[in-house]
Length: 314
Length: 184
Image 1 (cartoon, each protein chain N blue to C red):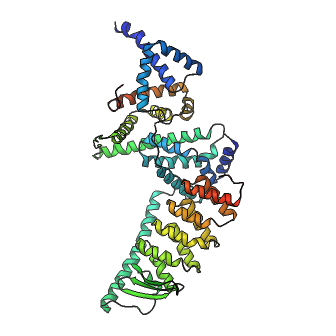
Image 2: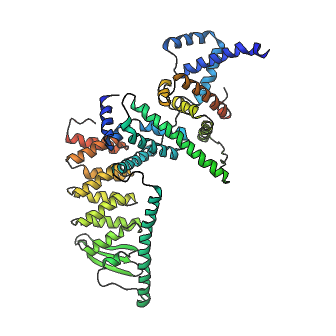
Image 3: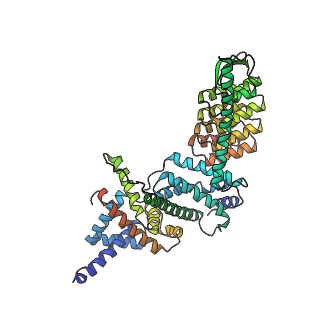
């Protein structure tokens, strides 16, 4: 009985529904589509099924994938870029996870041991001396490695004289020119990750004023590529932008432009590279003009290239 | 496939990472979107994106250029997303067996945005209940708006099969979302 009542009618409905869905998903040929529209005008059931299916389609339209957050795609691209770089370095591919963790553990242990032993030594000294000591002489490298804070007390732009307050378990002051190795060493020490972003920013800004030594350029490049704080990285990029005649500085700026996750740092890097005309810079700018996610930076790269060669298309 | 794309493929096959980036640039947004729809979570989708594109880079030497690069790339993405879901499900099963409470917090839709979020959440749940093929067909054809034949190439099956998976998936999704959709 049920078969008699439902069989042919149900089949008809199912077939109609399949036809409707084929229509909605663009699966019909032009001729079939025309025939479908013709039937639609005459068949109320077909029109009703279409209305029902269209209702679903309106709630959840075709291509209804919600828009991706731009920063998620940019972040994914950066991660891919870094991973591709790793792929290209022989021997780095697919390092076992336990080895990474063990290596991280050992690396994290070493500075702690150094700090602990230094701390014990200084506590002993502190007990003996029993008061805060004003160091008359510049700190030796060993002392600098124990610093927990570096504060710029005063800086005279006209003379280049700087007064630093150095804190470990004892507090000391250091005065000298920016060109002095001890001053540079103390400022470089301030860039160590354990210190706050304030001292690190001050250190980068001061080191950026005296960049004649390769070690300062190296410290600034390191800050550009590895400092956690984007403001410090921007300051490092700006400090390095007048030093692009050094190959290592250019390489650091290329890396920052191509890989830094912060657009401000990338802008500072492109500003630094803008005046160059060499093939490597051109290659990096071409890459940026194509693959950079940020519109402004991409356009700046294109504009810079166009300034070099009017035939370059924006 | 145009000559510029072939050139990029050849260079990337030779190990040029930059060429690979340029090659995937026009397709990586759909890759991430597809991954998100397949795994239902953006952070997980970013992992799938990473896995899939690195797998594509490593496997590019095997790409013969006799099919579309995008189809090949999307196929890798879909397969990685399905594998990711499988791994995640296994982890989830183990956690549940260990007594972890993974119950979702009920949410109250108080305005249109919340309702939309709730609909998305329910859609993710609905997709969970689909078979691998149904989910792939629904994500590719309905969510990404690909044509049936393109989806068939990616899923490596016939257009008729994709159509069947898609319609079944649509029915199931419709049933799950019925309380959240406006009445017809």
